[in-house]
Amino acid sequence: MSKFVDKLQRASKSPATTIGFHPSIAESRDPAILLIAGLSGTQAKEAKMVAEANADAGLMLGEEPSGKVVKQMVESMGDVPLGVLVKDINEQKINELADSGCDFVVFDIRAAATVLRAEKLGKFLAIEPSLDQGLVRAINSLEVDGVFVGVPGGDSMITVERLLVYRRFVELLEKPIIAALPASVTKAELRSLWQAGICGVVTSSTQSAAALTEVRKMISDLPRGPRSRRAKAGVALPHYDVDVAGEEDEEQENI
Image (cartoon, rainbow, N blue to C red):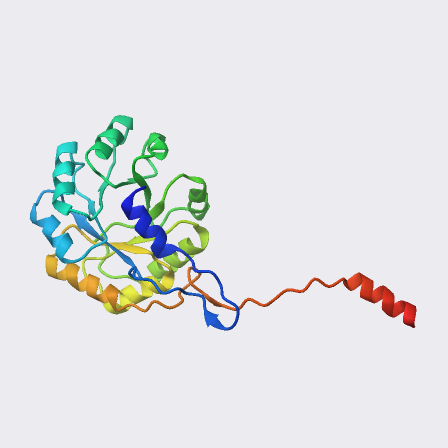
Protein backbone atom coordinates (compact mmCIF):
# COMPACT_ATOMS: atom_id res chain seq x y z
CA MET A 1 0.00 0.00 0.00
CA SER A 2 1.02 3.61 -0.57
CA LYS A 3 2.78 4.94 2.54
CA PHE A 4 0.96 8.25 2.24
CA VAL A 5 -2.43 6.54 1.89
CA ASP A 6 -1.67 4.56 5.02
CA LYS A 7 -0.89 7.78 6.92
CA LEU A 8 -4.04 9.43 5.61
CA GLN A 9 -6.26 6.53 6.59
CA ARG A 10 -4.93 6.64 10.14
CA ALA A 11 -5.41 10.41 10.32
CA SER A 12 -8.97 10.31 8.98
CA LYS A 13 -10.14 7.20 10.85
CA SER A 14 -13.19 7.83 13.03
CA PRO A 15 -12.75 6.38 16.50
CA ALA A 16 -15.42 4.11 17.91
CA THR A 17 -18.13 5.74 20.01
CA THR A 18 -17.90 5.03 23.72
CA ILE A 19 -20.69 4.60 26.26
CA GLY A 20 -21.34 7.70 28.32
CA PHE A 21 -20.83 11.39 27.71
CA HIS A 22 -17.22 11.23 26.61
CA PRO A 23 -15.51 12.49 23.42
CA SER A 24 -15.25 9.60 20.99
CA ILE A 25 -11.61 10.29 20.11
CA ALA A 26 -8.55 8.12 20.59
CA GLU A 27 -5.10 9.29 21.52
CA SER A 28 -2.82 9.23 18.51
CA ARG A 29 0.67 10.24 17.64
CA ASP A 30 -0.42 11.18 14.15
CA PRO A 31 -0.78 14.93 13.47
CA ALA A 32 -4.24 16.52 13.52
CA ILE A 33 -3.76 17.40 9.82
CA LEU A 34 -1.21 15.90 7.42
CA LEU A 35 1.25 18.30 5.80
CA ILE A 36 2.05 17.79 2.11
CA ALA A 37 4.86 19.98 0.82
CA GLY A 38 4.36 21.27 -2.71
CA LEU A 39 7.54 20.84 -4.78
CA SER A 40 8.73 22.07 -8.15
CA GLY A 41 10.97 19.02 -8.54
CA THR A 42 13.76 21.09 -10.05
CA GLN A 43 15.79 21.87 -6.93
CA ALA A 44 17.74 19.33 -4.90
CA LYS A 45 17.40 21.44 -1.75
CA GLU A 46 13.63 20.84 -1.77
CA ALA A 47 14.12 17.33 -0.43
CA LYS A 48 16.17 18.67 2.49
CA MET A 49 13.49 21.29 3.15
CA VAL A 50 10.79 18.60 3.37
CA ALA A 51 12.87 16.54 5.79
CA GLU A 52 13.68 19.50 8.04
CA ALA A 53 10.01 20.54 8.21
CA ASN A 54 9.00 16.96 9.08
CA ALA A 55 6.41 16.99 6.29
CA ASP A 56 4.21 13.90 5.88
CA ALA A 57 4.70 13.80 2.10
CA GLY A 58 5.96 15.76 -0.87
CA LEU A 59 4.02 16.49 -4.06
CA MET A 60 5.65 17.51 -7.34
CA LEU A 61 3.45 20.26 -8.81
CA GLY A 62 5.57 21.51 -11.72
CA GLU A 63 5.98 20.16 -15.22
CA GLU A 64 5.32 16.43 -15.37
CA PRO A 65 8.71 14.87 -14.53
CA SER A 66 10.46 11.95 -16.17
CA GLY A 67 10.92 8.69 -14.35
CA LYS A 68 14.59 9.51 -13.87
CA VAL A 69 13.82 12.81 -12.11
CA VAL A 70 11.21 11.14 -9.90
CA LYS A 71 13.70 8.44 -8.90
CA GLN A 72 16.29 11.06 -7.95
CA MET A 73 13.75 12.93 -5.83
CA VAL A 74 12.57 9.72 -4.14
CA GLU A 75 16.16 8.86 -3.19
CA SER A 76 16.69 12.36 -1.81
CA MET A 77 13.43 12.30 0.19
CA GLY A 78 14.37 9.19 2.16
CA ASP A 79 11.36 7.79 4.07
CA VAL A 80 9.05 10.67 3.12
CA PRO A 81 6.57 9.50 0.44
CA LEU A 82 6.58 11.42 -2.85
CA GLY A 83 3.60 12.07 -5.08
CA VAL A 84 3.30 13.54 -8.58
CA LEU A 85 0.59 15.74 -10.09
CA VAL A 86 -0.07 14.19 -13.50
CA LYS A 87 -2.02 15.39 -16.54
CA ASP A 88 -1.43 13.00 -19.43
CA ILE A 89 -1.62 9.60 -17.79
CA ASN A 90 -1.61 6.14 -19.34
CA GLU A 91 -0.62 2.64 -18.30
CA GLN A 92 2.96 3.10 -19.45
CA LYS A 93 3.34 6.30 -17.42
CA ILE A 94 1.79 4.66 -14.36
CA ASN A 95 4.29 1.79 -14.53
CA GLU A 96 7.16 4.22 -15.07
CA LEU A 97 6.22 6.24 -11.98
CA ALA A 98 5.72 3.13 -9.86
CA ASP A 99 9.09 1.72 -10.92
CA SER A 100 10.71 5.06 -10.04
CA GLY A 101 9.47 4.83 -6.44
CA CYS A 102 6.58 7.30 -6.75
CA ASP A 103 4.14 6.72 -3.86
CA PHE A 104 0.95 8.34 -5.18
CA VAL A 105 -0.47 10.36 -8.08
CA VAL A 106 -2.91 13.26 -8.20
CA PHE A 107 -5.04 13.71 -11.33
CA ASP A 108 -8.15 15.62 -12.39
CA ILE A 109 -11.49 14.44 -13.81
CA ARG A 110 -10.21 14.73 -17.40
CA ALA A 111 -7.55 12.05 -16.84
CA ALA A 112 -7.85 8.75 -18.69
CA ALA A 113 -9.92 6.23 -16.73
CA THR A 114 -6.93 3.85 -16.93
CA VAL A 115 -5.49 5.50 -13.86
CA LEU A 116 -8.36 4.17 -11.72
CA ARG A 117 -7.11 0.61 -12.28
CA ALA A 118 -3.58 1.36 -11.06
CA GLU A 119 -2.76 -0.85 -8.09
CA LYS A 120 0.86 0.11 -7.45
CA LEU A 121 0.19 3.74 -6.55
CA GLY A 122 -2.06 5.75 -4.27
CA LYS A 123 -4.71 7.60 -6.32
CA PHE A 124 -6.13 11.04 -5.56
CA LEU A 125 -8.65 13.05 -7.56
CA ALA A 126 -8.10 16.81 -7.83
CA ILE A 127 -11.30 18.85 -8.10
CA GLU A 128 -12.26 22.51 -8.15
CA PRO A 129 -14.41 23.97 -5.34
CA SER A 130 -17.04 24.83 -7.97
CA LEU A 131 -17.58 21.18 -9.02
CA ASP A 132 -21.27 20.21 -9.17
CA GLN A 133 -22.44 18.58 -5.95
CA GLY A 134 -23.93 15.67 -7.84
CA LEU A 135 -20.51 14.90 -9.33
CA VAL A 136 -18.88 15.35 -5.93
CA ARG A 137 -21.19 12.74 -4.43
CA ALA A 138 -20.49 10.39 -7.35
CA ILE A 139 -16.77 10.38 -6.43
CA ASN A 140 -17.65 7.92 -3.66
CA SER A 141 -18.09 5.25 -6.34
CA LEU A 142 -14.60 5.79 -7.79
CA GLU A 143 -11.56 3.73 -6.77
CA VAL A 144 -9.60 6.68 -5.40
CA ASP A 145 -7.99 7.10 -1.98
CA GLY A 146 -8.90 10.72 -1.40
CA VAL A 147 -9.67 14.12 -2.90
CA PHE A 148 -7.53 17.23 -3.36
CA VAL A 149 -9.52 20.49 -3.51
CA GLY A 150 -8.19 23.70 -5.04
CA VAL A 151 -4.82 24.92 -6.34
CA PRO A 152 -1.98 25.48 -3.82
CA GLY A 153 -1.15 29.17 -3.49
CA GLY A 154 -4.07 30.10 -5.72
CA ASP A 155 -5.94 32.17 -3.12
CA SER A 156 -4.71 34.99 -0.93
CA MET A 157 -6.75 33.82 2.04
CA ILE A 158 -9.19 31.17 3.23
CA THR A 159 -12.64 32.72 2.94
CA VAL A 160 -15.90 31.88 4.67
CA GLU A 161 -17.22 30.69 1.32
CA ARG A 162 -14.31 28.26 0.97
CA LEU A 163 -14.90 26.88 4.46
CA LEU A 164 -18.57 26.31 3.62
CA VAL A 165 -17.54 24.45 0.46
CA TYR A 166 -15.17 22.24 2.46
CA ARG A 167 -17.83 21.46 5.04
CA ARG A 168 -20.27 20.54 2.30
CA PHE A 169 -17.70 18.28 0.63
CA VAL A 170 -16.99 16.58 3.97
CA GLU A 171 -20.71 15.83 4.27
CA LEU A 172 -20.95 14.50 0.70
CA LEU A 173 -17.74 12.48 0.52
CA GLU A 174 -16.78 9.28 2.29
CA LYS A 175 -13.13 9.85 1.35
CA PRO A 176 -10.54 12.04 3.10
CA ILE A 177 -10.19 15.58 1.77
CA ILE A 178 -6.94 17.52 1.31
CA ALA A 179 -7.15 21.29 0.94
CA ALA A 180 -4.78 23.58 -0.95
CA LEU A 181 -3.25 26.32 1.19
CA PRO A 182 -2.82 29.94 0.08
CA ALA A 183 0.68 31.41 -0.13
CA SER A 184 0.46 32.36 3.56
CA VAL A 185 -1.76 30.87 6.25
CA THR A 186 -2.50 31.73 9.87
CA LYS A 187 -2.98 29.47 12.87
CA ALA A 188 -6.65 30.50 13.04
CA GLU A 189 -7.17 29.52 9.38
CA LEU A 190 -5.57 26.11 9.93
CA ARG A 191 -7.82 25.54 12.94
CA SER A 192 -10.84 26.44 10.78
CA LEU A 193 -9.77 23.85 8.20
CA TRP A 194 -9.36 21.26 10.95
CA GLN A 195 -12.81 22.05 12.33
CA ALA A 196 -14.28 21.74 8.83
CA GLY A 197 -13.05 18.13 8.65
CA ILE A 198 -10.01 18.59 6.38
CA CYS A 199 -7.51 15.73 6.77
CA GLY A 200 -4.49 17.24 5.01
CA VAL A 201 -3.13 20.43 3.48
CA VAL A 202 -0.78 20.95 0.55
CA THR A 203 1.45 24.01 0.28
CA SER A 204 2.58 25.97 -2.76
CA SER A 205 5.79 24.90 -4.50
CA THR A 206 7.12 28.42 -3.86
CA GLN A 207 6.89 28.00 -0.08
CA SER A 208 10.14 28.74 1.73
CA ALA A 209 11.73 26.32 4.18
CA ALA A 210 10.97 28.67 7.08
CA ALA A 211 7.32 29.02 6.05
CA LEU A 212 6.92 25.25 5.70
CA THR A 213 8.44 24.69 9.14
CA GLU A 214 6.05 27.29 10.59
CA VAL A 215 3.04 25.51 9.07
CA ARG A 216 4.20 22.26 10.68
CA LYS A 217 4.49 24.03 14.06
CA MET A 218 0.97 25.44 13.74
CA ILE A 219 -0.37 21.97 12.91
CA SER A 220 1.35 20.48 15.96
CA ASP A 221 -0.47 23.06 18.12
CA LEU A 222 -3.91 21.98 16.89
CA PRO A 223 -6.11 20.13 19.41
CA ARG A 224 -6.73 16.42 19.04
CA GLY A 225 -10.30 16.48 20.31
CA PRO A 226 -13.58 16.01 18.42
CA ARG A 227 -14.19 17.88 15.19
CA SER A 228 -16.95 17.88 12.58
CA ARG A 229 -18.35 14.47 11.64
CA ARG A 230 -14.97 12.70 11.65
CA ALA A 231 -14.56 12.74 15.43
CA LYS A 232 -17.77 13.66 17.19
CA ALA A 233 -18.49 13.54 20.87
CA GLY A 234 -21.35 11.12 21.31
CA VAL A 235 -23.29 8.95 23.69
CA ALA A 236 -24.27 5.34 23.14
CA LEU A 237 -27.22 4.12 25.20
CA PRO A 238 -28.03 0.43 25.78
CA HIS A 239 -30.93 -0.93 23.75
CA TYR A 240 -33.51 -3.32 25.17
CA ASP A 241 -35.82 -5.37 22.98
CA VAL A 242 -39.35 -4.95 24.31
CA ASP A 243 -42.42 -6.68 22.93
CA VAL A 244 -44.68 -3.62 22.89
CA ALA A 245 -47.56 -5.43 21.20
CA GLY A 246 -47.52 -8.19 23.85
CA GLU A 247 -47.69 -5.65 26.69
CA GLU A 248 -50.70 -3.90 25.10
CA ASP A 249 -52.58 -7.19 24.76
CA GLU A 250 -51.91 -8.04 28.41
CA GLU A 251 -53.20 -4.64 29.56
CA GLN A 252 -56.43 -5.04 27.55
CA GLU A 253 -57.10 -8.48 29.14
CA ASN A 254 -56.78 -6.99 32.64
CA ILE A 255 -59.39 -4.26 31.94
